Length: 232
Image 1 (spheres, rainbow, N blue to C red):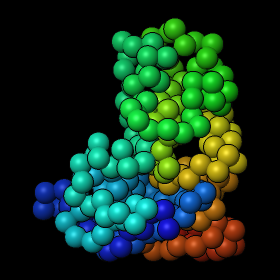
Image 2 (cartoon, helix red, strand yellow):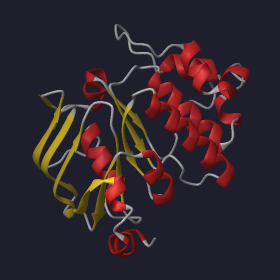
Image 3 (cartoon, rainbow, N blue to C red):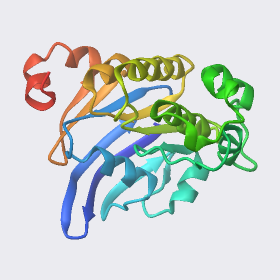
Image 4 (cartoon, rainbow, N blue to C red):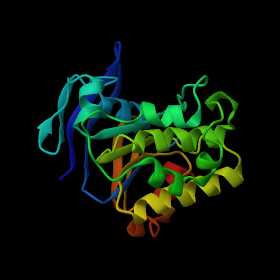
């Protein structure tokens, strides 16, 4: 098991946000975390990355306990994080942004050539400043920069948030290409229709608890669950 979360409880101050969450991701899977806005999806991703440390429970990555480790330590173990707010370096060029994602001493198959093949627009604009890109282009850059670190697990937090429908479609196709290349992804997303098209398995959160988990093909047949928790 690449990622195994057992009974984590995460708080913001005195506010209890995640309640005994358990979740697993196997190598090569795309697993999605679904639910309406405010159910704890981003908090779960932040808990894995060490940005909001759970008060209890365990998080194992490749068998190593990572709860309580600092975010840069977790990143160096092989977890890449793409935040929902698309944090880039606006005064650096696209190429310079990508260079910032390279981890010293970490080898892998994600190089400039491979990233440019996946995101051709970044190659044609590699000398352009990051701050001049559109929201969708910045999202592509954020994902590409994370891939430059050759992570074993990619955490995507609300990647389609705020994007126009055409850009959502383009980004969906690029995430699908990553899936087909065997990239392991944990995807937190409110756009359920896009997410179900991309994922092997799903977890549905409601009020900080897992209310349903299983294969996406099984979930598609459960209309009552889709309507109750996702409004589909």
